[in-house]
Amino acid sequence: MKKIYPDDKLASEIAALRGQIAKFDRKWSRSMQTRWLLSLSFLKGVVSAMGALAAVVIITPLIIWSLQKVSWPPLIQRVVSQIILQIGQANRQLPQGVGGQ
Image (tube, rainbow, N blue to C red; front, side, top):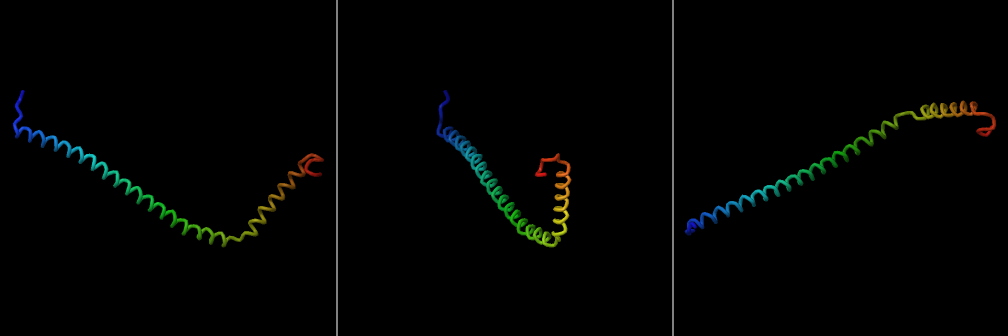
């Protein structure tokens, strides 16, 4: 059995201390990396939300403005007249007594 002298004990304690410091350093760096990633994720979310808000604020008025510029009555009149035409053709194709005739 090897006799432990004070210098050997000191050396083993220093080695153990270095091991603990290295272990703590790994945990600390992982913790700091997690905080950094969380911070980046938070900022990314904030920027995305601001971008979406800006898009809504800019695009919605543009859509409303462009819809105001379209003359709707002729478009609606065409669509409604085609619907009426198709309903009339469908009623003519129905047998007698169906569809209120």
